[in-house]
Length: 337
Image (cartoon, rainbow, N blue to C red):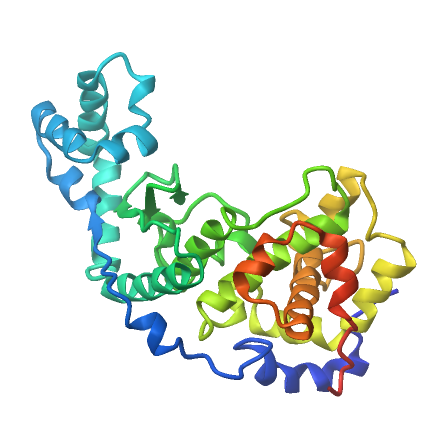
């Protein structure tokens, strides 16, 4: 069955306004209880220090000053000595192409106080809902397009070269549909989405497509709850037009899953068609954006939380995908709703 027919084009344009900034916009402001917490974030711009270093001794000093960064990001344990890593870093950072890339990053990101502020508020929200959350150290770096984002319990490293403006001559070697998501507004949502994994409980024995859908649905719901004013575009990586058309055709999308008995599919190849990265979900339509199963899972989780009125921490701790689906009362939205 082909979706996105001209019959629904009119609704698509109307729904762009309704859904471009999110599905439910009751209030997008974080509460005073969240924002009033005593939490201050400072992003350390390590690329500036590393590209200023001119000797092995200076690189050794930086490695010793930032042990978590040296161990987790630079993987110092793989080197025979700290000096050997420092020598390699010296050669890399003296490379003319890397110098040009670093200059481009410096020009495009002269100030990241807006990212810092947005991430600080996100950390406050996570801390509010999950008091055990410990704020990691946050660094920026120029990786030479080797690493976009590293998120662990102890540190976060943002490879700013990956997030240069889309019009910049330097771009990561990624498919176009993925490269479009590497832009400044995506940085903090991508971090929050990654952090959600530590709270997202699952049943390891459940290897169905439904379990994958609910896992990603919980991740997106978490990110929206932590960043309620952020457009869905920057959370799931769909354009506003794709979001609108997906809602306009939600009945057709859902019928595809039901008619083909996909929810309890366990074949990894079949699951990947609906969950994995792709320019479109061609099993449904070449006009349907990729990762359609994740998007549908988000809708199911949203309905579960709304209808069952469960707090965010309780939702994330629920490992039973089947329970979430059954108790969600999920029904696809009709185009004129």
